[in-house]
Length: 254
Image (cartoon, rainbow, N blue to C red; front, top):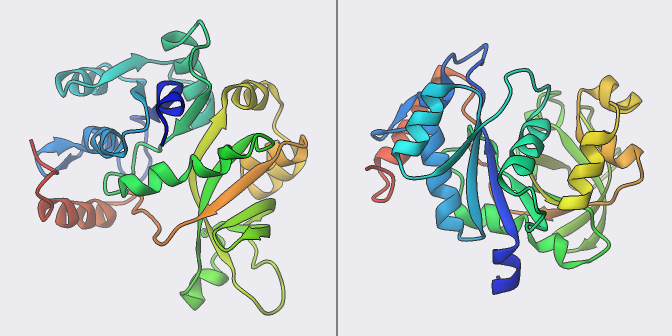
């Protein structure tokens, strides 16, 4: 990654305390550190730009600050992570120095730093507004699981698609690969500004998928194909799995 992109890239990590399935999730201990700090460490290892954690709770703020990461307090009433990161962006970079914003979800403590870097690649094409990630589905059950969001895209190369649609249905029909969407995004700043200014769209509300708002507005989303889906921590079982993974990692602890 060249120096120019790194200097103009912000990694924003939204963290919400209110989680129905795993209360207090950002502060859950994993290998001696709060989960949100583990996510920040993975972003630091990706080495793509300045890292800011966007929080809505003073306890999380203090934990992130104590770990030496930059942190900003945001409102508690945001409807989505993209709204939270946009508020954070306007606070930490009011002069508009950052041109690219990577949104790394705050519940991905085991994410491979190379996966974060991969999200930048589609933005090498100046016509792409938003970049995101996907993995080819190999588990037959995932193909029909509505909790596994599918990318319907037109192939641009062996490892890139231009997104045409995102759906919880099994799509597209017929022979060929299906792709599991990974909800990590890299936005051009102007695209994020436009996105958060738009009202929720018809298909977004129907599928409960925020990214459809951008497609319905005519924005271009390209999708990089990566090898593995990062573990999202949503349940106590996920948390235990993340603890096992990072307890075995030499770089995960204090």
